[in-house]
Length: 487
Image 1: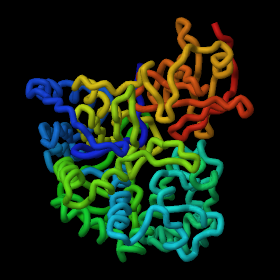
Image 2: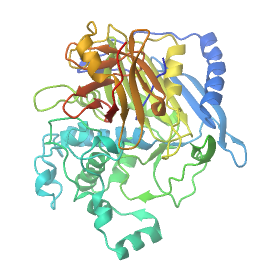
Image 3: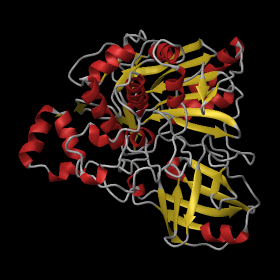
């Protein structure tokens, strides 16, 4: 079965996850296995049309592999090197979350503080949003992608700006913090804070504004309190005007051909996407995270523990990381739309960092994030959901019920015109979504939801018979357009 990976990344090793102290199992990856990995990487890069990549593998506390592949610049055929810097996109959320946790550790804010304490012009319908809701994506604020999961749109303020304001912004290609705030203040909530979990860039933009208010300057805080103490000399925050040495160009695909990804906007506070770094610096960050240099054990626990809803239900997100268990194995990850992924498997004592320059810009679906899971599987680690998997909320796989199966069989489409189909293949229920690169067997859970098998994450679908919709736990809603007969 094909695997999928959305918005993924990680950090790893040394301490705790899920609120427990980590007992790291030494994987002891052999040198011969690491050497053989090069062939897999080169084959996968060709299959996925990835121009360039730098791979890092951490075994225990040691960076055992640091390997560049392909090209950093296609125009001049410039090869990548060990120090090539990539745009981290949503992988940057880890740093914003770390800044929030560090400020709480110092007593300068609390996760239980209301957002309104730091946002004087806070809209009335946002008044019950707390810092922890923003951190865990449980605030109810809308997201940018995928749009079909949200009742309300994000960044609605742009449509209400005058032509003069928009022209001024276009002239400098820069979104100031005042303009960024104005762009979201009219956003409506999709649900009451703490009631559900929906990934929201708006939420992490607001976290950046909170850091800016409390610490005096968001950029300076990250640079002086996170990057510099960690020795991250090649890590910096978005600045489109400045020329940086050894920074990779970004690419995407359109009609099967390489194109420039065209991410050219500057943001004064790019707290949901704007850090640039390389594998060596991320390894240094990894070392700093899991020592007493920056964080106490309690703070580290917060970064890598699952958040929760008002009713106590756990969500698969912590402080800038997806936090899951797959088949009982702890799986911590996050990625970025620019084609970067960091996967941590603490039970194996291994972390995989794959930074590529093939991202998604709204045209062809790209599969660069699958590179990380390909490598994890090559190293012999279990990370694909099977029938032994227990969901984050304790649901177990049961025997398929004919009535439940009959409900979900059919063709589906999202508002973004992504199609999917649920059908029987040799008596086995299959969920097929070509645009997401996914064709997976479905298994019924004892809570009535469906688990996708053979997928390297907890991907769950819930059918709403009233609305004839399949909703995924990864923020996508599929509307049924036609039913087909079961076999």
